[in-house]
Amino acid sequence: MTTPSRMTTPRSITGPVVVTDVPRPSLERVDALARFGVATVHEALGRTGLLGPTLRPIQQGARIAGTAVTALCWPGDNLMVHAAVEQCREGDVLVVTTTSPSSDGLFGELFATALAHRGVRGVVLGCGVRDVAELREMGFPAWSRAVSAQGSVKATAGAVNVPVVLGGQTIHPGDVVVADDDGGARVQMRYGDQAWMVRLLLGLGEHVEVLWPAELAATRAGRAAEALAAYGAG
Image (cartoon, rainbow, N blue to C red; front, side, top):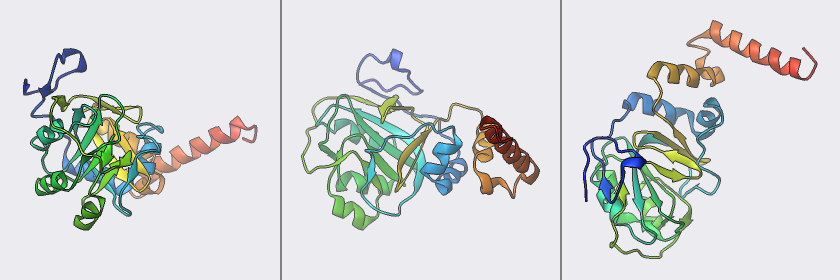
């Protein structure tokens, strides 16, 4: 298995691979997104990045944001979850997908314990989860497509920290994943810090009134005028 030390694009992947040293945004920036939640971030970024209605939390009241570490597994095989755990660090969210649809429980209590020890904030699964009672008791947040006790094998290598697709959205390693009771959303981190933050904050209404009252008032007035004009009421 190859282990590149920098980001690998899908075009360059020819077999099993683990990408290390993935660039990550600052935790301050990530934590700001967690405060806003999925619905607000999704709307603020032009109604993009939502991971679909079938991604559901196993708990209630958890709201997290973290940097994506991705694992691409074969159906019914969690070998690459083991490899992905070794790439996780504090502030990350593990994102697990499979090469074709699978509802098998690839993730459970043992993985959650290892990730919690590393400071990982939660897991987002395009497959199934099990040991749900234990995960709730230990307070480790998880979002999944299914709850299934179906076991898995550790036989076929996939990839870690490559772009994956979940809910129709491409998640790159280093993107931020936001998750709460509404589901999950992906925030792409390939844009410049300043431009990204301005775009986010200008879409958040009352959250920026303290920061930029004049700019916010002008933005609101302009949007209201456009909406009224569209309906012939301006």
